[in-house]
Structures are given as structure tokens and as C-alpha cells.
Image (tube, rainbow, N blue to C red; front, side, top):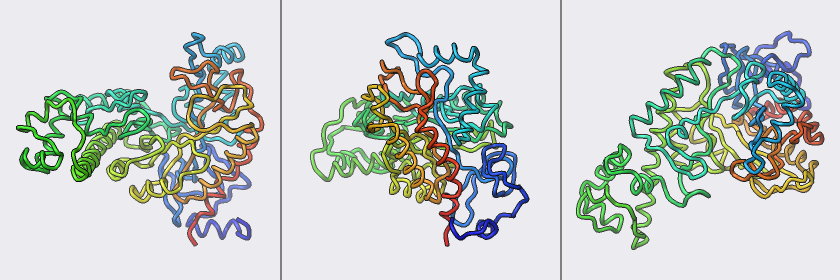
Length: 447
């Protein structure tokens, strides 16, 4: 921000100038140059068109995180153990000593957040996020792409049980930023299945399932009579009861019927999404009124009906991407449709000079560790120029086993190797970049 005085900048941002000396990073990892209202918990605030997280002491906070900072690392089925876990157990002797050393390294490299799937031993040492896996524990399957019946009373009961166990004990923890409700749920056709969720509910749920009944109500309200539905969908069913027993859906006979099927699929998806986000919100807020709801970690794309449905029930929209550049058009739409800030909750770059196969796992490999560092800097700088973006979480702490983790991923995603030694070209650059992002983000102020 060349040519700006500190006082001029703080005046633009609408905050008080505090006598804070040269301190730049405060207790929770926030930016010590500025202060907003302190509430004792993390929250969001928009000032002069720029969104921030705000830490419990009132400092602006951009979440610079790392995922899967785990003492246990990735279990390798082919080996029967986790190479990283075996190495750090020998190196440190205890998880407590590992956690202390790891938190120190994260801070040295400019990170301030422990991301999803991380060891709880780190939670007392740094600001952290927690993933609740609400849909997953209620029947969703990440690998298969199955989705739960969100209209079922059992769905809400599972969510309440999760929140009672995970959220209630943490409701007064100032180090907790907030909760992700799930990770990469399948909201429609993707790499796991070509079917829409309406088709899943129609063809896979039993006739008496609450989700099947909700779908039948949706069709009845839209078409009134089975004849109207048949005409629109190009079917020839005798009555509504026959629809509930359908196990196969023939192709649409005309372009018009295919178009109408898609419209219905998207409208019913909106109902599913609203029920999902409402149920997650209600369960969390029942047991924890303080912490942020950080969204559902969309997997590279986010269907518009889902985004439209979620805005009332989340504080932040989370998005995973493995592109070389931030998908600005997609992120713009996420923010515009929800009016909420956005966080990148997975991104990474893997290099072939690591010696790892890099044949499984998201993203295209780059040649060298310097390329990883260069891509990190370009990605983060571009991201932090977006006034609505409040953070980024790198995937992940340690490299994956060469023989593959549970799903076969075998990539150089780590900041550290299996022996816990850092990829120094990358971590040195991260230290430099992370130290500058608050200034970059502040420069996104309008005017």
C-alpha cells in the first residue's frame, strides 16, 4: 500500500488507532495493526467493502490454515501403517511434544489456523476449525457420493447428537473459529455419479421414506394430477403410487421433457439443500450460539440452487479448488448469492521432484518445489485481492504415502515429508507470503 500512512489506512477502515508498538501478530494470529469490536469469539465483519474474520480480541484475522495436521498422518493399507506416524512417534516420543513442535513450526511459517482433520492435541495451542461430518454421519458417503435423507426425523436426531457431543463442550472455547458441517458432499452429477439428487430420492429411497414423501408432495404441488406430471416428464404412470415404486427412469422422449426434468431436479435440489443447511444450523446453534458456521466445503463447483439455499444458515461459504488460479467467477457468484464471505478450504500444488508418484489426488503436478512455491504465492496474492475472501487452508501437512492412502492418493501435498522434514523452498516462501496477505487484503478496500 505504497503512499498510504498507517493512520490514513486505519481511518479508511473505520477503526481506532491503537498504541500497539510494532506488534503485528496478536495472540490468536490476527493482525495487530488494527482493532474492531472484541466479543470474545471469532466473528465476521465487513468494513469499507472488505470482509474480515475478527478474532476474540477484536483484531482482523485472515485464516491462514493447513489441513490434516495430524500426528497419525495417512494410514497406508499396502504397508499396514502410517509412515509419517511411525517416524514422528520415534522422533518426538509423544503426541504432546509433536504438537508443541508442530504448532511452533506453523507459526514460524506464518500460519494461524489448524484446519480440518487435524489432531485435537493442537487445539489448545492455536486457533482451529472443526469438521463435524454431519451429513456423512447421517448416511452420506464421500467416495460413493451417496446423500442422506434430509427430510427424515432420524437425520435431525443424528445432527443433534453430533452437536451435543462436539459443539456443546466447545461453546466457550475462544480458540475455536467455527465448524464445517461436511466436506465435498455430492450435490449433483460429478466424478462419483452422473445422477441428480432428485433421481436418487426417486429411485433409491423406499416408498415410505420421508424423502420420497417430500418428493411426491413436490410433484403434486407442481402438477396437481399424475396426468400433468406424465406429460411434463414423458412418462405413462397410472397414479402417484406408481411413481413412489419406480426403480428405473427411462430417457426423456423429447427435448421439452428433458428440459422440464432438469428444472424440477434443480428446484427439488434447492429444497434438499435448504433442509440440510437449516438442520445443520439448528443443531449447532442449539448447542453452541457463539462460533461460526463455515459451510460445507464445496468440491470445485457449487450448484446455484444449493448456494441460494444456504445463505441464511452459514456465516462463511467454504470452497475447495485445485486449480492453478482462484476461480474468481465462481467465488464472485458464491459471495453475491449468499452475501457472505468466502474461504478457500483446500488448495495445493504437488511436484514431481518429490519422488512421489503424484498419480492420484486432485490437481495437476508441477515440475519442482520452486514451482510449488511460485504457484502458492500467485494463488494467494490473487485470492487476497478479493474483498470477500477471509482465508485459505492448504492441503495438507504431510506428504501422502507413495503406496497410497485409503483411497489411493499418493501425492506430494505436504509441507513436510514423511520423515517430518520440511520442503524448505515451499515453507520459506509461505513464511514470506503469509506475512504480507493482511496488507494485500486491506488494499482491496473500495475507493
